[in-house]
Image 1 (cartoon, rainbow, N blue to C red):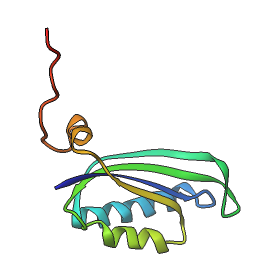
Image 2 (image 1 turned 90 degrees about the vertical axis):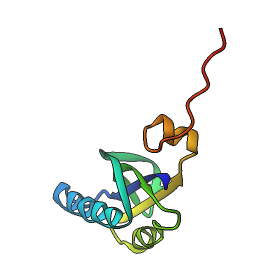
Image 3 (image 1 turned 60 degrees about the vertical axis):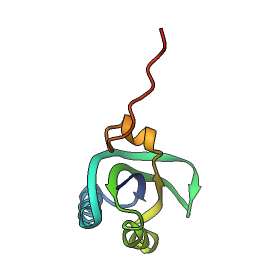
Image 4 (image 1 turned 90 degrees about the horizontal axis):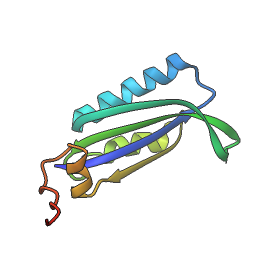
Length: 113
């Protein structure tokens, strides 16, 4: 198993109900291939710069675990989705995943006294 962090920015022109439906669909797609550990909805935020002639979007950050390559179909859907402005999937390093409690990893080194 590998630990991932996925950030998704949905179009700011959507209303709250539409965004929640999109997120519910995204969550079910992720749960088909992996396990959602944490789902953090940040809400509507202003962009630092204009993206595709848009100035605002709905941000979500999802921590999950899945096998290597299992997230490919989810990423494909995010790439072609009209309501997704940007997305970024990163694989967390083993020590960071263990620190967040996503994977059982090596114990952190203790300080020598």
